[in-house]
Amino acid sequence: MFKLKCDDFLTYDETTGTYSVSPDQQVRDEVEKSRWKEIGLKILADWRLYLMLVPMVLVYLLWRYAPMYELLTVFKDATTAIDPSERGWYGIENFAQLFNSSSTYYVDFWQSFRNTFILAFYGLLFGFPLPIILALFFNEIRSNIVRSVVQVCVYLPKFMSIVVISSLMITLCGGNTAQGPLAQLLIAICGPESNLALQAQSGLVNSTQYFRAIYIVSDLWEHAGYDSIVFFAAIIAVSPTSYEAAQIDGAGKMQQMRYVVIPSILSTVVIMLIMKIGSLLNVSYEKVFLFVTQGTATSTKDNYQVGATVSVWANRWSATSGGEGVAMAGEMLNNLIGMCLVIGSNMVSRKATDVSLY
Image 1 (cartoon, rainbow, N blue to C red):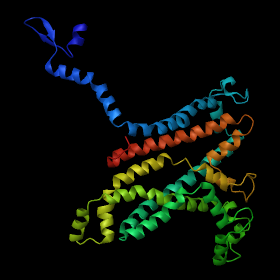
Image 2 (image 1 turned 135 degrees about the vertical axis):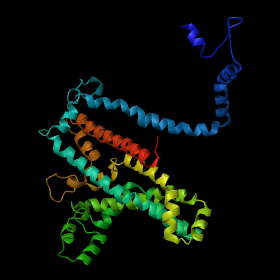
Image 3 (image 1 turned 45 degrees about the vertical axis):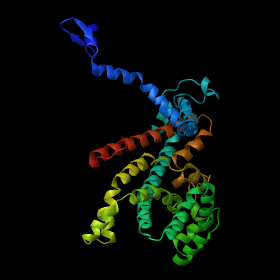
């Protein structure tokens, strides 16, 4: 048995009956001995860059990995004790309550999951193509000054607080039984007898009919400009000779976009689409929480029916007695579905376009 292991890296001399190390193996051994030394020298040479990684590593350890210990609460009975370490094991009963139609949690959770999926689907449908269109638009602006001013104006909402964004939308569209300037303009266009005017009496943000549209518009306003940076950088990297060859063949601006620009940035588009699908169900909790009114779920004017996402639902039920485990089970189920979506989209992309995250 020992001889079989030695044959992997030793050479047997039949004349002398001894084993010796081949020159190639000696080189490999020397490289392996000095491997960690070379890595250490490279780290010392660029120690400033590695030092900059320390805060990010700490952030991931403290805010991403350390909280995973609390996931054990999903499998414990939250009604037995206040301290999570003293709670008894509950198995998958918290998940069973989500699927059990006789449970009071059933309607609320699956309605919130439906709201999450609808808001995420509309966000992907309208929010993913818009940054690409903006990047194509920026590429056609010849004046660097004009392009810089337009880009700053479009990027600015991303650096504003979500509270400010939500407050602006509530002020413009109307909330808390008030009619905002935008709501008044729409009423003037559609007429005082229209359905929009009736909904605007209690504020368009509080309306179950227009809440999703307002949320999607505010999300596009906030993220579309900033998300276009990646696509604009990919467009800039396109070789000028490709444009020149297309012009020689008689291609106009639209044809250059179709046959030169879009194929050149297709790999970037696919990667960003996979990442977008991965965070599909992670709808902004803060903005939805600020938009959603905390009233009864049976009220016809309460946007909780169409706006409460899984995160809002979990926050609501975690504050109730014994609801912490069920709330965490709902969040975990939502995240598991999101993980399956990104794995599935990555597999489809790898099979269809040979472009994938891994």
